Image (cartoon, rainbow, N blue to C red):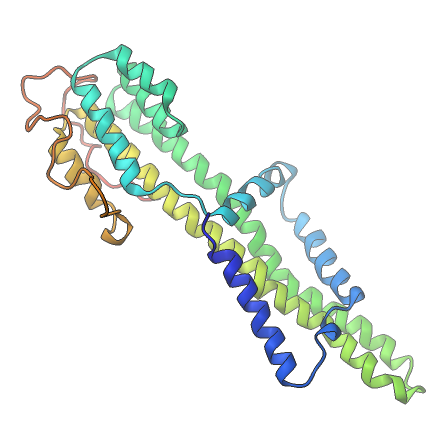
Amino acid sequence: MDPLMIIGLIAAFASLFVMVFMEGGAISSLFLVAPMIIVFGGTIAVSLMGTTLGDLKNVGRIFGWAVKGKIRPPKEVIDEVADLSAKARGGSLLELEAEAEKAEDPLVRSAITGLADGLDSDSLADLLEAQKNTRRDEVMSVSNWFSQMGGYAPTIGIVGTVASLIHVMENLAQPDELGHMIAAAFVATLWGLLTANFFWHPIATRIRRLCELEQSNMELVVEGALSIQAGVNSTALNDRLHALVPDYRLDTKGNKTGKGTDPDGGGSSSGTTRVGTGATSGKAGKSRAA
C-alpha cells in the first residue's frame, strides 16, 4: 500500500489545526454541523447531475484502488513479457494457452490469447489498444467526477455562508450574538475551500497519476506482444521495453534481466519457429502513449 495519500491528508489537517491553535482559536469551532451538511451534502448532490449511474458503480472500486496506490512495478511487467517471449520462441501453442490461464492481468491474458490464436499484427494491436483505452476511460470518468466536486465545493460553501448571513441580518437586534453567528457563517466557506483542496482535487489528481502509470505498464504489454508477434529477438525486445520506462521507475535491486540480455538464451531470431506471422510489423516498435 502506498501511504502517501493518508500521510498527505493527515499532514494537511494537522497544519490547519496548528495554525488555529497558534492563533488562539478553538479547533472545535471549525466543526459545526450545519455548514458541513450544506458543503458535503450539496457538493455530492449537484455533482450527481453531471454523471451517470453507470459511472458511479466504479467510484468505490477506483477510490479504493487510489487509496492503496497499487501499481505493478514496470520491471515485473517486463519480466513477464520476456518470459512470454521465451515461450513464444518455442512455438508451443499449448504452452502459451496455459500461460493465459495463469495470467492475472486481463491485458496480458488477451495478448497471450491473441498470440496463441495467430492474430495478425493489425488485429492484435487493435484488440489490445481497445482494451487499454477502455480501462483508461473507466478510470478517468471517476477522476473527472472528483474534479467536478472540487470545482463545486467552494461555491457551495459560499452559498452556505450567504444563507447564514441572511440569518445574521435577521438578528441585528441581538448584537451580543452577532460575532458568533458571523463566525459560524464563514465556516461554510472554509469547508468548501478545505474539501476542494484537501480532498476532492488531490483524489482526482492521484487517480489520474495512477492511471498514467497503469497505462505505461499496459503500453509495455502492447509493445511486447506486437514485438513477439513480429518475431523480434529477445535482446531487442528487452532493450525496447526498458527504453519505454524512466530509470527511476526500474527496480535495480537484486537479480534482474537487464538491457541487452536474452532471457531465453537466444541472441537472434533467425531459424526459429515463432507464434504469429514472423513478419516484421510496422506497428511494432512504435510507442502508443495514451
